Length: 169
Image (cartoon, rainbow, N blue to C red):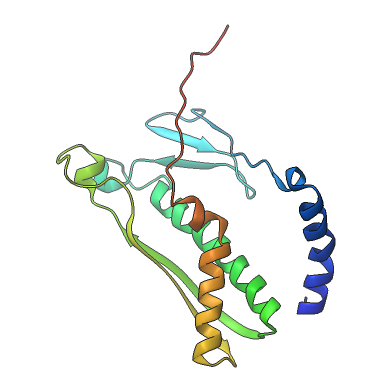
């Protein structure tokens, strides 16, 4: 897809959302259960169910997906799609890309060993090594666009609300 086709696809959507802002409100959801044994959560995904469990640093055996890895994967997926969209809009042809998302977390916070230690992934960096004909200004503009429009990255700026209710019989 080139910039002209991308703009043609998005133009009617943008106009609709300008005319009717409520039409832009798009529901999103994830579903999961405690279908599997142990301290796990089974989450439905596009490629099938994923069983998340404790990381070895918190008592797991390494046999389940780590929620931190899943978070970084979701971030990288969103950043990658956003990067391609912004690059396309800018008229940049990316011949190839190597993408990675990295961060660290301190198990002391997660395990409640030290309340002064934050819980969560810190120092998150998304890196894209691109084979592209772009100058430094264009690369900066591309990075700024990805940072601004990546839904997952922007969502991380505000913690979610957690609601727990009793099941009805």
